[in-house]
Image (cartoon, rainbow over all chains, first blue to last red; front, side, top):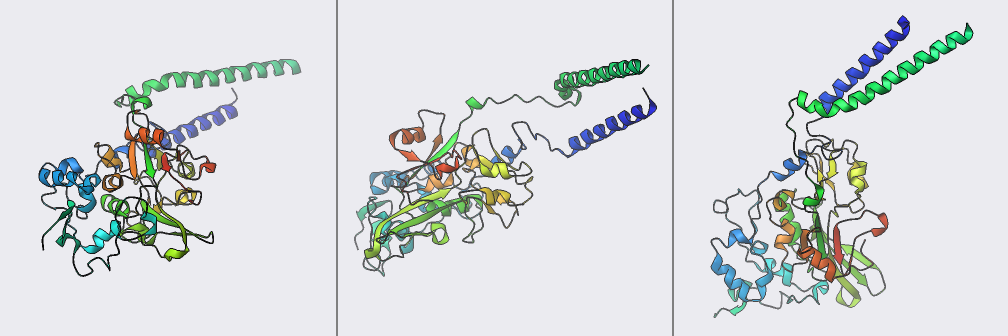
Length: 151
Length: 259
């Protein structure tokens, strides 16, 4: 083999080798295991505590409130719809208890009159007409809305 | 002499070519054993058919536009509170008597949607929850130059936060406007079907809080799941079917006005 060709071939091999080494060094672990992405990223997305705990966790302590809710029209509504966790709450709901909302504005989120809600079976009210100054939960038990309290 | 040189050259050419091709083949044979040399633990390959294929059904006929899903999503996923960062949001569509369509979503529907059009002008009004459609052929994944966004084997479109370079090509590519640039992490952010929750067996936060069960989450491969039952029971549609994205969020009762 002529010297020129050998040198050319040798440099080519060296450059390809260097390229492969650099590529190896720069490609992160697990890249390309399932496709053109870092497979470990799925674990990165997974490892995080959930703030919303789910109804099963609530009923560990509050079975009574849950049972009462299931007897009335709010039966389909999950606990955390009305009792959302605090922002950035730790995993333990006893340290950072969920928020108890009980304002007219909060009830109005679902029950204020809106033409888009007409046929959906959710009672709608004009909150200005229906006891403007009084809070809803003073008469209605939010867990069982048709159990009206005596005034 | 001329012919001899030609023959010699040809012979050498064939020899080199054979050596190169043989070398490549040999390398490809050796490659599977490289893991042994590098002491990499061989991980068992996961068969795709054993994994769930997540999808969501949205019943437009049940949505009352209370905005609890958008609110819960922000709490659960630590999305900035400003009214232009949403992983999911609710839009109110109002078709007026003159045929004009008004779409509004103040603060993504958080705090409950209110109708701004007077009653006598309204022909039809309804709410549509929106989120990432988790496309089977996702335009955002095709657009990403570094492989930082991808479709996981469970069919969830995810973002690799450590790998994203923040070029926002995916945000432009998404036909549903479901992505945004997170101002805190400075990378693309989007709905993950609450990947950390579904891995634990919980429902996504928006599904968990929906008071009318307008959102149904489940496994498309499990024929007994609520989602499959929902798809069999209702004539469902996907958003923007002409774009061929084959999305996995199915809408029931979708009007033609919805974009």
